[in-house]
Length: 171
Image 1 (cartoon, helix red, strand yellow):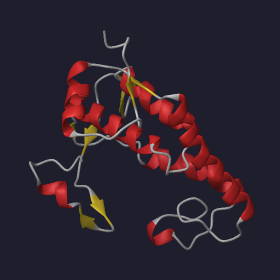
Image 2 (cartoon, one colour; image 1 turned 90 degrees about the vertical axis):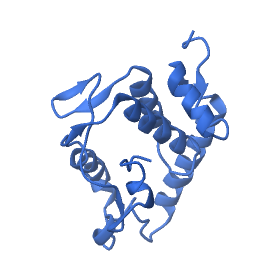
Image 3 (cartoon, helix red, strand yellow; image 1 turned 120 degrees about the vertical axis):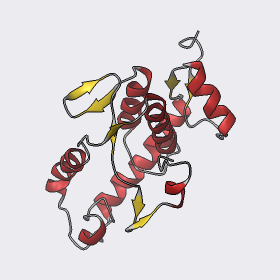
């Protein structure tokens, strides 16, 4: 049964075969204690760096992209995070297929579980909860089954190389 043998995110190398088997099997995701410690170690490093360093840290104590020279005060950090979520919470375009949404959630949870981002353990667990409970966002609120996608993925104004492969730029 899928719940009896969860896939431990971030505990090993991924292959296309592992990903395909995971998505086809319906197995749930989980974090091991070792992975939680790895995520927390990076978070602790970031918290210590922010407390001891006066120089800006890109994307943490600065804005993003063209706003990289704008310093974000400690008092403004929560508002910055809230505004980032709000700015990415729109829902336009055609519905993204549920298996693609599950893949996106899994890959995000896996990448964050590697322990290089400074994210909180709770954030990774929340992504896993969304995956495990088949919850996807829609403009009307959270409900199973709907993410919309519009546009093409870009980095620094240029399309991702994978954006033209197979008509999908998800990966």
